[in-house]
Image (cartoon, rainbow, N blue to C red; front, top):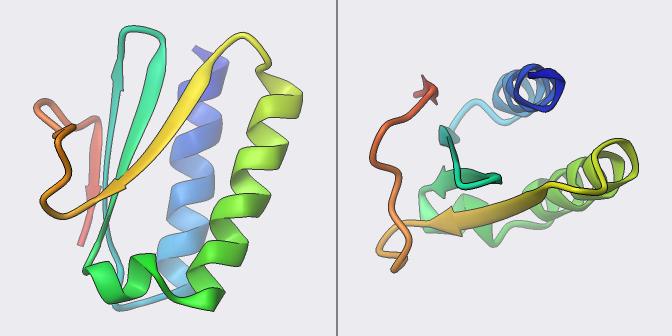
Length: 86
């Protein structure tokens, strides 16, 4: 699936730019779920700008799919990650 390949590539780029970030990614029920930790990174301006950029590009490329960003202790959890970048 092209969207999965795209997200994996973009997450790897973010991980290289922000070396203290941990990322887990799962595709479930037509939704791409991305867990970012620790929470202080999730709330940082440098990360938020990358998330917004990724979201905007994603929705332009894949308008019929959803993307959800979560962090630690979220009600939604990653159960079967396709990738883990630590």
